[in-house]
Image (cartoon, rainbow, N blue to C red):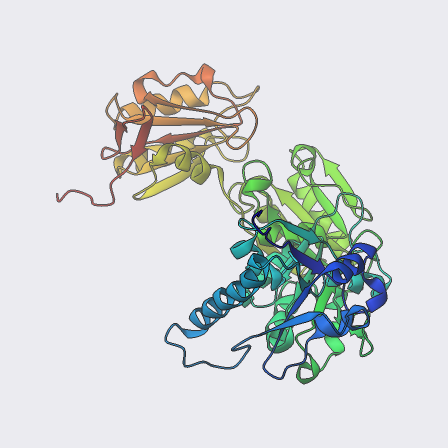
Length: 499
């Protein structure tokens, strides 16, 4: 006599609520199943069962998996998580008994079974032991977009899906950077989600969708929704920005944005969001090329030596009601565009134009991180460019910082027209620093041409330095060491020796 074969497990996606949105495969699986399982709260009603009800037979064995707790408190010794873990283990055991008896089990799931679905907890506990098939379903996000009649994402846009249960600060940061977004699991989280949308500047674009495709469906601008009326089965949607209206809003501003030293990994969430929200982008061509092109935005590029002209141009756009992003490499307040914009903004006719500064990762910190912690104690930041200040001032500041035994971060060390400053700086520093003082040369940090070297001060070669290089000169306390994997690290101790 042959051994009895085990049954087959199905996770069946039912779609967002309208029974007519079930797939043909979902209907076939329900028809073939011996056991129909579905989750419900303690009140006994199951949305999943109601969607599939017309396809259930009197001879179906129904397994109602009743949550021991939903939003209320619990006296379980393991708390909410402990109560749910115990429930999932018990539910899986009940289904396993049917599967061991050779019965086919279909677990019903609203939307898609593996998209924030309860089925996944059964899947993780059973799929490695029994033949399993997951039948995908239309997600609530897709249903919400369809009901709004607005494209969700288009072209190269990225869709961000967020649970409303995230901390408000995290929601704010992610919404600020999102092209398009859906925030699920509202209900009691709605007030925090609304605040996050407002703080991220996205509230005006946000739409509210409740029970998409169901009889009690409701859509509205999210800002107009009463928080007391919001159920769990609702979501906030930020549709595609591609066709969103841009242009003079009557309330212009200038936002000066730090892009970091190179590439999207160095861009803060706040900066990413401000770039996406701008009507106009203004900046040096090389830096502007690092910002993704977005439909509807105007881009105004210029040479790197016209900061004042660029600043006034941006302020003029803002006076006409445009939302303008002025971009800088690194941090905009460190030898960059923030100063130029503020200088102009403090004079007529720009005094009333709102100006904000959004910080970015500066080159000194990026280069320091590549080698360890050379900026671990007091340090000074000096530009070697004598284009805007006399070399005598630079030399005086180098001597003062060297005398004070400060670590030095040297910006703008050289260019095609400035080739002698690095050598002269080395001579000045050697009057106060030992020849073997560690020097970090960081070029194109974060970019494709990144190169980081550690040399002795006496061996600092000006020919190896250009405008894309940052120089970090250690103090008398800065140390180097070679670690077990062969890498050389540099750090400056936080404790300074007693005099």
